[in-house]
Image 1 (cartoon, helix red, strand yellow):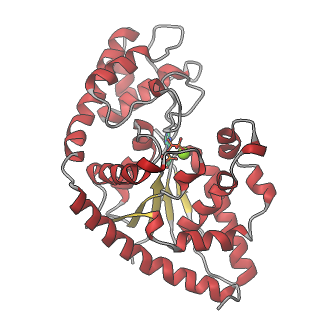
Image 2: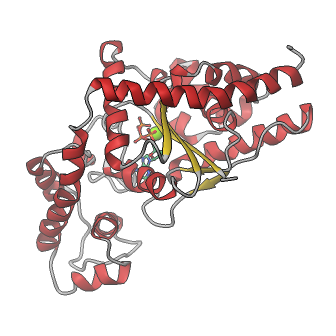
Image 3: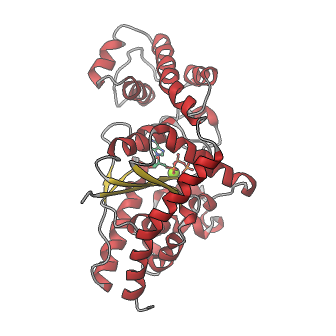
Length: 325
Ligand code: ATP
Ligand code: MG
């Protein structure tokens, strides 16, 4: 039997190159080796202010992006979180097992609450519990994510271990898969921050659907460090970040990428980087347009059915163990 993968992205903002390099690229690479579930986590998108009039459309747009990167049937199951009610139900049970203290330690909550935790939504606070439910429902072996999700994965494991200890062996304890390179792509405007969909400044992110002009402008305006050499140097994080993007999208090894730019300045480097990104995204952007709403909805409906059959079995077991059934 194949081992199982679960992962997901929120239909907030637009997917960027960090999401691709840190997550989706690996989802595609792993989907044949594993039985894979890739979810559009729309319930997570309610945790920060959003526009209800466009949420459903954003969910469908994200599904299109998943499919255009190569995810989906027959290799993997793509579905929408809110189509499988078990996600919300298991969240409640796990909430009763979670400690205030451990959720208060989550750095994403602190970041997204922007220093005003008293005013932050309770959903933002319990976001990691919903994420734990997403993963544990599917008896997941491996969770491919970017580095920012490492702490949430640790909480997921802790909750699984705690539940198994208190109520008997129920959940598989999942392992994270964080790629050695590309797990933490930084903002083009501030290399100390990760590239983020919810960043108010779009200049910091290269979106997967940006046109060639926009990409060129964003890369031209990307901050650089002092110095002139294009290399992987911890003391020059802006150049290191741009070179990482170049290296991963061009398919070169780190050494080949450095060698390629030996003796060339930042200007030439940025020009070639922009070309590389544009060329990489071109076929992908063409594929995004291929899915009409009908075929998309069919794929999502079938995906939800497959997901639900597994999720329901886990939840039945959980309800029995906690004494509800
Ligand atoms: P938001 O700001 O709304 O949280 P996000 O950019 O963090 O958006 P998510 O939908 O939360 O995107 O995350 C989807 C996946 O992309 C996760 O696996 C996450 O770890 C990964 N990811 C997000 N940002 C980066 C990044 N800058 N570099 C590498 N991986 C990333
Ligand atoms: Mg995020």
